[in-house]
Length: 234
Image: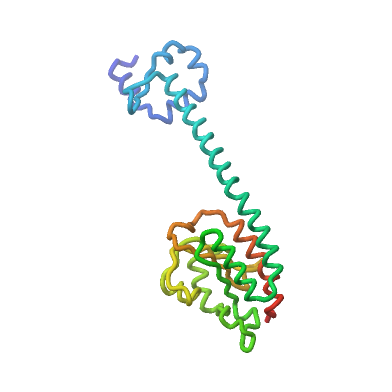
């Protein structure tokens, strides 16, 4: 028969996992010891301690509040995205009605500024498009060999990048732009192999990793077909 000291030592060897496992495999414990459960208290950071039932109710209230907050955020996103959706529809119609490549780019630029952005820019890979003189489109050309290290660094396996650009990156992609805060970049075409679409913001926090890219993807898919009206593929 174990002595009292031995029983105490045995009880002290129980860890959280053993207690949890016992309660999971013996749910009737709470029925057999209902009165004890009602008397149990749990440490509380503000009130000192609360009953186990109060603690459980508090957790449930916190969970419900989290769900309500999530629903509120979803509704806010839907409210924000709906105007963007209709703006995208209007932009598609506006770009399709452009009479020249420069007019198309100007309309895209005005649309971006209407959203409060600094601008919109298109660069086309020179090995995929006929951009040499006398086409008048040489300013759109971007050497794939120069872009490839940047693509690996910023985009990896993705088709989109949202964030900041450093000096050399900005000089390569947007040589006429002196300074920007952040950029949203998307590879053009279904396979992302024919060019780059970029929206710029003066706010360094405007475009950030983790933001939605559905709008970017739609435009990146739409533009190549419109561009081919004025620029021939190589």
